[in-house]
Amino acid sequence: MPERIQRVMVITAHPDDSEFGAGGTVAKLTREGKTVTYCILTNGNKGSSDRSMTPERLVKIREEEQQNAARVLGVDTVDFLGFPDCELEDTRDSRMAVAAAIRRHRPDLVICQNPNRTKNLGASHRDHRTAAGIALDCVYPLARDHMAFPELMAQGLEPHTVKEVHMMWWDAPEVIVDISDTIDLKIKALQCHASQFKDFAVVEKRVRDRNAELGKLHGLAYAETFDRIVIER
Ligand SMILES: [Zn+2]
Image (cartoon, rainbow, N blue to C red; front, top):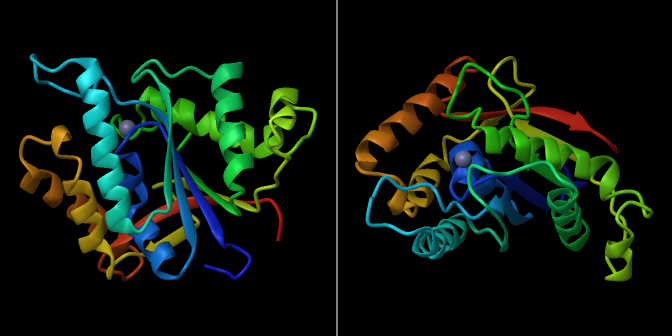
């Protein structure tokens, strides 16, 4: 990662999305000394098949799991924006909350999800597409322009220009990250999201197979892939 990128923010819909889509990359970035922040839009309160679970209990469990996973990867801070799971909407409130997070943490690089529907239904979850759309609209122009959301200036949150965006991407990706030496950390971080898995061995195999498949095309044991938008060189 170039010198001009020092601060990174990963913006996703749910607790566990950052680890699934970019866990190996995050581990690499923190190992290189970059400061990484997570901004998670929903509270994940619908993600359970346990009939005795309540949304209130699940929020607490998922926050704790996410904090543990972030610690494994060396992430600095986790912002939970708390919008309801599976009901994330692109509204003034959600855009202002993400613009505020960007202005607060001032990332050079934003990593977000894929804003497009693809044939991969899981990765195309409506919250993922919505979160990615909000993230991109906040990078440009809402976090950057001082007259967007006057409330934020009143809170002392000055405008901020993000230099680059990486979107989690699989079809003809522009950025291929070799995660061969951080895949084990990615797996360890994913394991922290215990409430999400009945049988973690199955999940581990699926993740390793997927990252191996992405790497194979580029002669790597394991890779994560992204598309890129460069805003400021
Ligand atoms: Zn998700």
